[in-house]
Length: 220
Image (cartoon, rainbow, N blue to C red):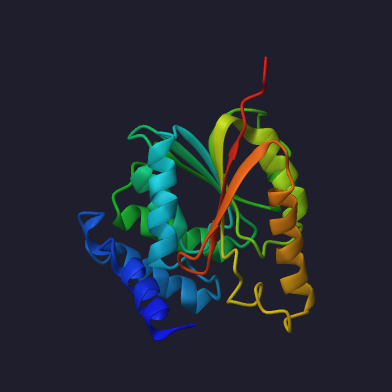
């Protein structure tokens, strides 16, 4: 990659100043630090900014996030959602949920706006209502990601947005020499989205990559 391209990527990452998104200017930085300590890799600022834009674009009133981590992605989504929007965020790790709730408290997010659920993501999303959500997000490296994609398509309303961060998976997806199981799994997910007739996708280099797609309305 040319030095100019690297500089452009860095400029994009810094374009939105995350310290101004909440009254407490250190909320996201502290949440990101907690995520790193827990081994729950948080989204980078460029990816978070894109998630925020997508939530705002559909004025999301109901959203599902799989993989709460320490709440970094959650905070970006909440900052873009409708002021009364509710985020349902799911994580199998209780410690992650505890860290995320601390982040929400520090950001002064009203408790009715966030529903945190600790449990197996496939089991939890299987109980959620069809066609009831404006946005669904899960990380590309999530276990059983292709199954989660099927659930996401079921949960989204027509015109709703799918958001998949970490879609370039530490620059390994585009590297033909990377043939480990995790990278192959991410590639399979990206192919499944690209080949879905009911999704309109785009893959960007923001953060560690964001795959976004809109669920096409059903033709009459």
